Image (cartoon, rainbow, N blue to C red):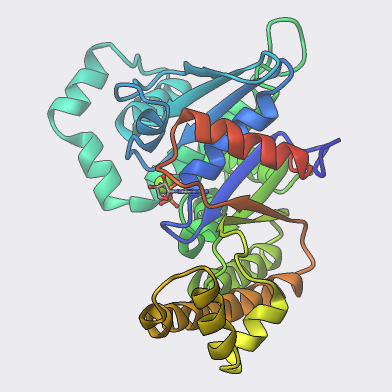
Length: 326
Ligand SMILES: Nc1ncnc2c1ncn2[C@@H]1O[C@H](COP(=O)(O)OP(=O)(O)O)[C@@H](O)[C@H]1O
Ligand SMILES: [Mg+2]
């Protein structure tokens, strides 16, 4: 049973480089396991998902990229802002996305113009698309996708991103923009949405996680879990770590090296390495403490030995499932 049984829209944020894209993909696989249909969406147009699933750049079209354990499919979509703007004009002003007016708009650079003059419009389009795929009706009743996972903007921008239609909607009191804004906010602030935070056990990402959770909560967005990524397995017991920090292992080390016939000249280098390891372990422990204060469901993913490939993604997906995130 998932820790978020009502959630269908999973927004994954985190400080850049913490593994947002990787975790979003693993979560999509975990949610698809056992026969579900899941859409994994990339909104920053970097084609990170295509790379991860070892595919050519994704078209602006939902494309099946992986089969999950026990059946179930992960479809991926990299949103193209220009196409999204044309879709939008089509939806609200009945402008054909392939017809002459759209082509003309593109030709005269109207799309660049619109997105440059009003940078917010891009996020309006992206959030509108997220709402559309989340609420899209299925052919046999119910929803088209059982779940949608978004590889979202980083922690520093996530609240503003989710709130954009609200800001823009405030400017428009009536009309399609206002209706669109109300619709998007109704989904984002409902129980079907959860915003998950990916972090590392390092000072900056932990700090950003704490701040983002505060901000999201203040604005009324439902916060989901905290996913601690790239966790190293502990090589030393807490007792050994304490001994290293106290500088009390020198004798034991020399004796140990002699016992196994290794040159004791190595001892200083090994000691210094153990010292660095202990210092990092202490920092990690502080990170864990700070995260524990948040009192959010927390999940840990191991640091995989190699670059994350499809096999690695399945491994991370099972870890998330086993811990109850999916
Ligand atoms: N659990 C992990 N173990 C090993 N490498 C990881 C793990 N998670 C992410 N990575 C690697 O870290 C790098 C950054 O991950 P990515 O998902 O692209 O981060 P982000 O989207 O936050 O920028 C990538 O090279 C990825 O393969
Ligand atoms: Mg990324």
